[in-house]
Length: 336
Image 1 (tube, rainbow, N blue to C red):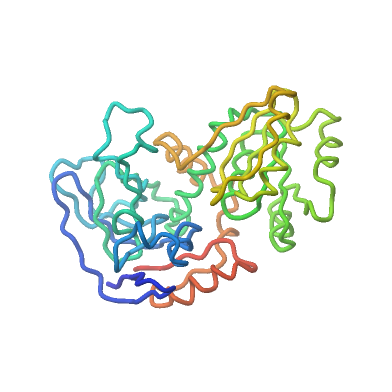
Image 2: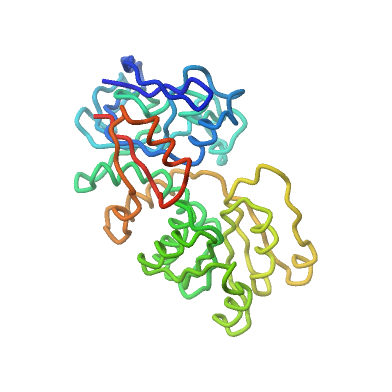
């Protein structure tokens, strides 16, 4: 078995995996597939060198089968297909309902070794059993799908409401798809022509705001009322400026995208329309459960979101392609 080690300077070395036998309450997983996400690219760029340890095994979007379990683990057994909710909350207060974003939470694949290795040993409570009918490549999409489920749940989005998603990358697309499954009418705004066209192939109403007046489009679609919910997934100044112009009176804004720097926000719109804004970060247990249910129902076009699957030996090339971003949604590494 092999592992992909980030060594800094946009360099990934392929080396031997060093399996760790599971201790009590731990599970050893033979990793099947693992996805490259935006956070992994931030690490690849060197933006998180002060946080990770070298050499760093990245990866937190994954699927695999249980290889062995430690004493005290009884919810999975060897051979079970699984995924991992990669939040190690061991040091958090068990009674804290928000330990998923707690001060002592460790994000696996960043603060601890991740899934880009043949065998991965993790705390047992992070392991979720998958339906046997779910392809393992789809299982590697459950972590970003859980993000989308969390975002839509926190938005309190209901069937029949109008939603606008700003940003058509992997997370934005998944938010739009989950919102549609909720019964909402969805508009996706994205400046990449490729992503606009791709979203349309999934049956989404997608427009390019550089070509179409987004505010006018939403007002026309909602009979002048505005959107019930706006999901800001770009993390950009343009997204921050646009998100307040689209909601209706007492509309809701959910901030999903990570903004590296503070962006101006039009507070007058919050006063004038009594808007509500909330942040949405990662996920909770119920979001992972919902993501597994949605994936198993087969209603989401998960195959279409997988741009390609590469062997772990090609991790460097896979990261370089993902980094270029053109005509890419999700690249998976195959570990076994």
